[in-house]
Length: 340
Image 1 (cartoon, rainbow, N blue to C red):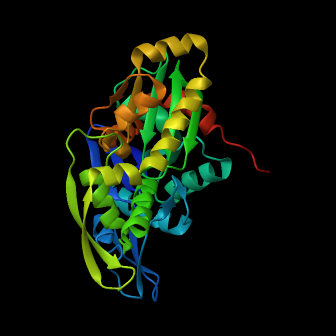
Image 2 (image 1 turned 90 degrees about the horizontal axis):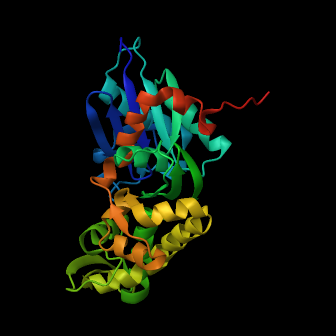
């Protein structure tokens, strides 16, 4: 291996995960950066910055530099990557790691360049990209080189990537900007409409993780939730139920199920038979939403399996793909386009 470190990065809208060859996942932190607007100085990155979300004084802002699975603030993304790479690989200027970064399957040429440049500026010596569903399938322990079809749904923070994979490549896929963040937004919207209560992103996320529901539960669960009353302007507490969550999350869940259905409609008949046998594999943080496997099965009629450790599948697969660099480098995603 020489002095080169091999690093796989899952550059997620909600979290950044770093996988190092021989060590596994060495970092899993929120994609949040806290900045002092007066001096433009970075005050905190990752977990420390996330604690500041919605709680900062006027001159400090907590920013999420990735939106809907792509870079929305290039400079901050670069600084955040630099911080995470240094934290995992050390600060030596001589040994620049070879980096594999994961991107959504619907990524554009401009977005690919932005990711590649940000990783290079952050200290990468040789940067390659891999599509999220392929990385998720590898990380879930599936053999993607077989002719038999595999269907993967990766529900992350910013995007849901659904792909049918056979012979190491994507046969049919779609990437929609409906995932964990949209679940949070739907909960915030529901609270305003139904309870006239304004809640923040963190509270919405807590509700989603604790009692979020994609399919009717046999036994209802509840949770106390605090926010600001939109009428009086004072703090107020309400009791939320899993049935409320089912109603709140109905629209984004429907969009995800329809996206899965649209990929199945474009599946060649031979592969359709494989999928009905092997089923759909769910990965990503969204796979942890209670009953989402039942909801997808209800819409598609195909069995759905949640991968082991769904939140780390993409990062693991990104790192494991470094063993097959020749295949990855020759893939459609890493063909360097000439802009001259």
